[in-house]
Image 1 (cartoon, helix red, strand yellow):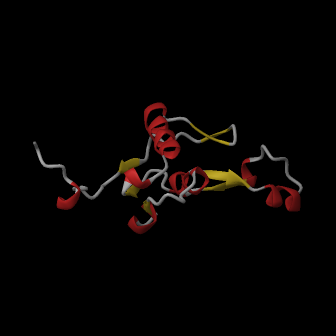
Image 2: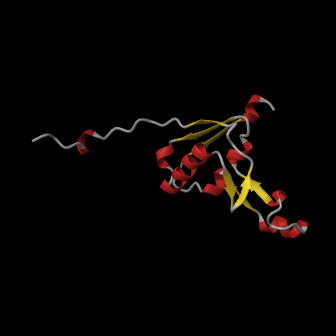
Image 3: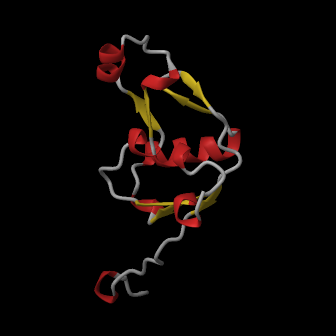
Length: 114
């Protein structure tokens, strides 16, 4: 793999789903090819599985929905990934990066001490 293929980056926005990051089952693909849903060839892999043995970066992590943040932290802690209940390869060989911009409160919004 070239270095460009080993680096995956995602800008965290509120509309990002866990399916974007991990993947999802593609029932249409399963039906067209006559496969059962549990077949690994029916899975549409997201960004994290594609970064296998590479670097996965999420920019502005606090902008992700809380449910997705918890899911990502569980993956980092457990190293076990499931897509719709079906086990996926362990992603422990992937390096994680989560840079974020420091947020400061605008001067007008700060309360002055009394």
